[in-house]
Length: 147
Image (cartoon, rainbow, N blue to C red; front, side, top):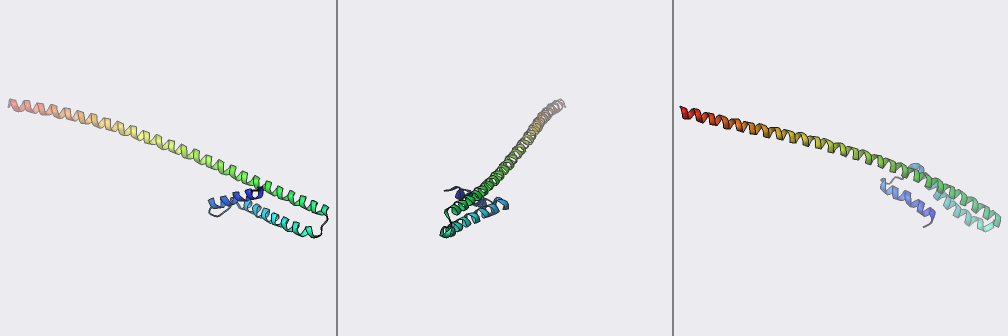
C-alpha cells in the first residue's frame, strides 16, 4: 500500500465511525483535492508522453510530485490535529467520568454509614424497650402476687 492509499484509508474508516461523515469537511475536501490531483497527474502524464520534450516531462512530473507531497503533508497534519483533539476530548471525558464515579462512591459510602448508625440506634432503642418491658412485667408480677 503506498502513502496515498494509506492516507485515503484513514478518512474512509472515520466515515464508518461517524455515521458516514468524514472527520471534518476540511479533511474531506483535502482528500478530494488529493484524488483530483492524482487523477490529473495520470492524465497529464499520458497526454504529455505524446509530444513533450524530456525536460518538460521531468519539470512537469517534479511539479506534480511536489504539489502532491505538499497536499499529503497538509492532510496528514489535519488528521493528526483531529486525532490529538479527539484524544484530548476523550481523556477529559474519562477524567470527568472517573470524578463522577468517585463522588457517587463517596455519597454511597456516606449513605451506608448513616444507615448503619440508624440501625445501631434502632437496636439500642429496641433493647432499651425490651428491658423496660421486662422490668414492668416483673413489677406487675410483684404487685399481682402481693394482691
